[in-house]
Length: 69
Image 1 (spheres, rainbow, N blue to C red):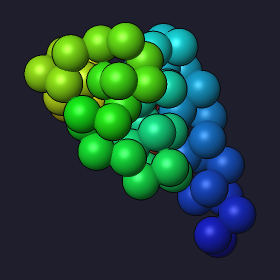
Image 2: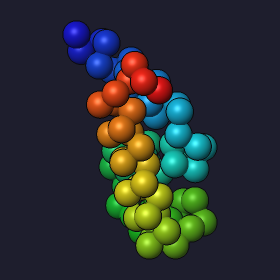
Image 3: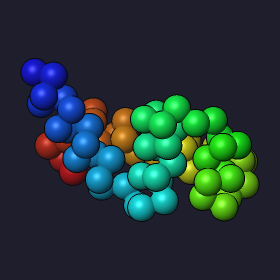
């Protein structure tokens, strides 16, 4: 079951645009804060926060209703 959940999460992340993917990966797998992500990607920290908020909303939608996407 864990493998299936991981596969669904990986698929949902891959469906995001490239910038959103990078922000999510840096935040949750590299454990960077928004300021560090901003410096890494050449964005403002507030922009990183907006991208992350939108990406998490999209992931939530995709993971709640994967059969409809």
